[in-house]
Length: 176
Image 1 (tube, helix red, strand yellow):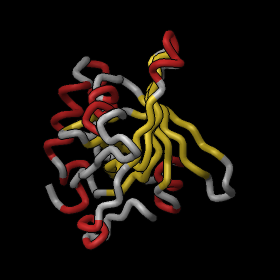
Image 2 (cartoon, rainbow, N blue to C red):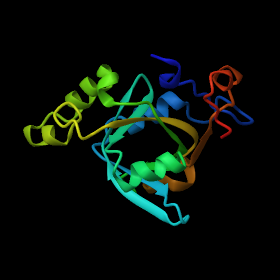
Image 3 (cartoon, one colour):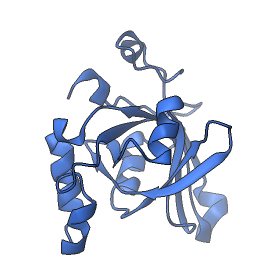
Image 4 (spheres, one colour):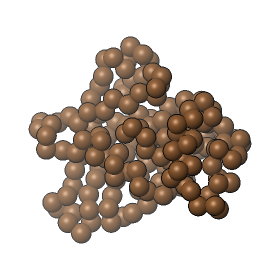
């Protein structure tokens, strides 16, 4: 992986062992078919849209066409929120989506997307079959909220990314 494709996320808080790890959060994100992505329009109003994505080596990738509202919004402000479709088993992640270029430049991600979305009718919506999908994003998470509605009081969890000076030196800062 290149520097902009590196995930380095750690739990923080008063008791580092009490909260979820980023790996545990990524594992909960991984099996979802669709995610809801929230971005900000240029006037500051919210924009929500469903997206497909894949978790590979604890990193969440999504893709799009640069001409879409979500891609134009992310080009102006990479801050976003992404969450599972479920209101029963909740995972909400706030962070930045970094543009890492064309999907074809990261073949492992394109292959993982094709494996995940393997129904015949899915192919036309994948970058492996449609070159109009011309941007791949990597989530740089900052914080996450998790809970199970059936046991809300006992399952609420929070996670926050630790600022990483090594990533700051590479131009990948959690403090943008």
